[in-house]
Image (tube, rainbow, N blue to C red; front, top):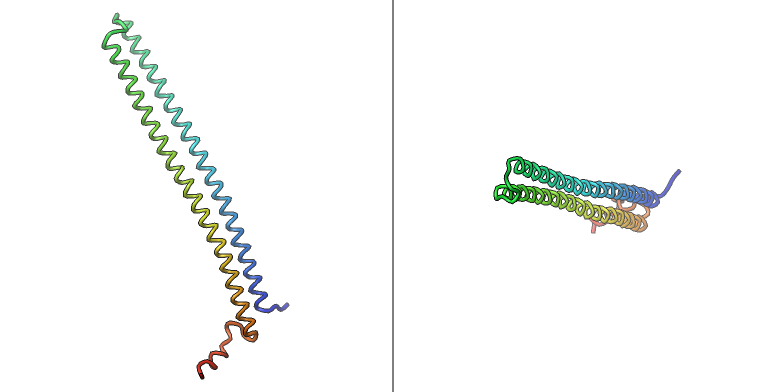
Length: 168
């Protein structure tokens, strides 16, 4: 089986383009899966923050009830300054803990949003690069075909013409 060099170059470029396109599709699928993983991690992060906040509120309720039981058992009034001060301090600490949980949850979400954005941008850049690579291969093959047609004997690698140029 024999084929001219231009046909072989075109076949080679077509195979290379198909391979590049296939790699690009695989990368797009991988990026989509990675983004889905980040989205799932965000949901887990939000749920964990909500659970932690609920745990803090439950612990604060338990401490307020204990404080009330201590005051009731010792004969103090539930309107005493000591009782109210302790209840207020329990609420203040709980609110501070909840705010810290919210900050940490938002920080985690921000990191995941950044990772999602980066994955999307890099995916677009890789896709553009793959298309540019396919186009460059096409232009290179077209240039080779043109040079081969201009000199069908040896194509672009024919060195017999270089001596003629040197003699001039």
